[in-house]
Length: 99
Image 1 (cartoon, rainbow, N blue to C red):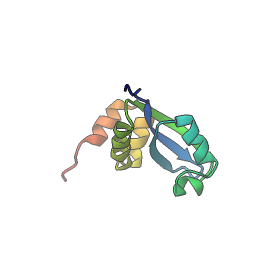
Image 2 (cartoon, helix red, strand yellow; image 1 turned 120 degrees about the vertical axis):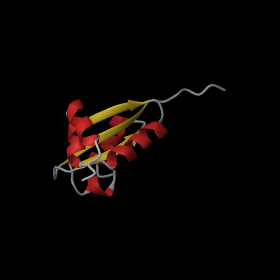
Image 3 (spheres, rainbow, N blue to C red; image 1 turned 135 degrees about the horizontal axis):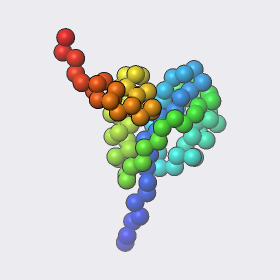
């Protein structure tokens, strides 16, 4: 039996309150519609509507989920640098400050 690999996504939404929400899914359009219908996470339900600001393609849902978990730990400033594709700023924000 041959299984087709399904594309997966790590995504970032901006909510009505300005907050950022990070998630992962197989079906990006469907998931965004679910969030906006109040069927998503509790955070997005309370801060509708949401708007997609970043989507990264992954070859598996496990890869997308690992990336989601990584990005969720980032500061807001670092997430915004990712969204805006500011590579130099991302590099600087990734450096450890041992002061």
